[in-house]
Length: 581
Image (cartoon, rainbow, N blue to C red; front, side, top):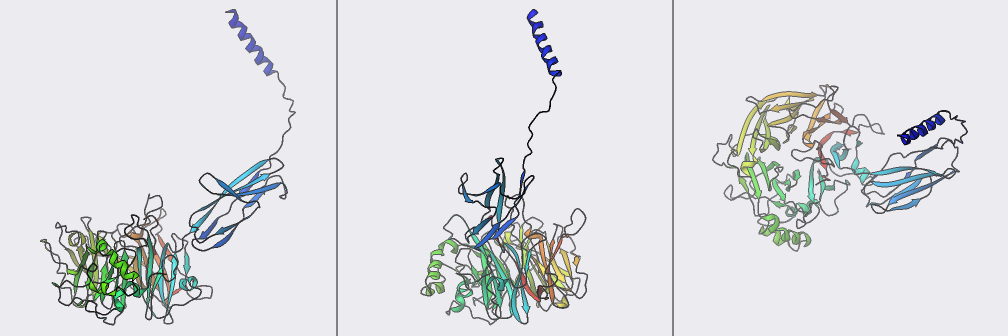
């Protein structure tokens, strides 16, 4: 107990001494010279060699001038090793045409008087041009001119003649006809496990067929039109006779690639060769193998190498399903392409390639909603694209018109190609009286569909865009947007994709290609703008939290020379690269 009180006494004395301590304030304080670095924002264009001057803003809290400072720039060599590449306040970064990733730099500034150092990480980000891009084909004084709207979001790059920009001022020849795109052309043989792809698109004029790289808007180094539509320049019993109409459409997707030329549909299996064969009618359909005119087709069904086509000569739908030639005929296709003409006899044989036929839709025991072999006389097929039926099945929605009445046909791809006998092959048909004036369109009416929507399509009439919902007991027509100027005319209407989606880099979300609708609005003076909508699953224009509709307008105003950015747009397509595929 005595020892306990002794400890208490010692602690109490210590506290008393501390309470009597007087702070004399005799310290030697030093203010710190704080160094601040504002890195700035830097980017580069992939594939374009360049020099970029990295020039951060440096400030000091106490010191004027830079005599007290030294600098160091470092760049990673491996994941953990960094290499010193500079020792000045600025750094000239060399970009090679092989650079395609974020370039990381560490910039450090040291105050030699105090020995303090500030650091900043600077990222130089790649810009991949034309990765998500609308291309617009214009008629400027009878000549084809290619413009573009490049990027995502509200701020994008807009150019009225991107072909000239990318090709040293060169102009296209001929009057404009139409555009086509293949976003999923393989770049490696199918024998490899990975499927790397590129996007290519075609610009068709009265004098030339341009096959361009989607990544550069320059002519493709390996693929020309005559190389793709190989048999067009060959003669023989197996070759179709050209009806003189020339090319009329080009479409592509993951599982195939097709071009209509001379009334014949030419098709390539999804390898890197893009070697097209003319599709022949099954002898049971017609003794003449090319007795049809390919007016439109839909290739977007995801299973296998197939399509559904509209034959305007005979007013019927036809289907195509190639289950044999992809692997079996690949080596033959390689030899034909590499042979420089020496293997043309093998192309004409149709032995290991082009063994499948265009066949009748037929029936499967379920009652068809319409006769696919007898469509109305005078039908103009406006669009064939993917849709979703009430049973969440994959369908082609074919929309045509006669006068002011739309004729809508639903074809079940699960039944036609997938042999699912639970559904009829011709699973729905409707006649819909159009609102608005369709007579302003000389032939096709702008119509678009997407698998994002259930039995729904969109069309343009005059200055307005309408939604048609045929999923209800009685089809409904609703105007969803109008330009507000009666003299305007909507001349084009397309979803970015009718069936394919792009995923974000972390796969958390999609980019919404299947419900982003592009619209070309032509004004009375011939100037045009691209209007883009985000749509809900109900077919309404999306609204933000403030109730504002999600609408973007591109190409409004004039260029540096005072001319409209876009004029007399004849056709437009959306070209994209699936970087995560």
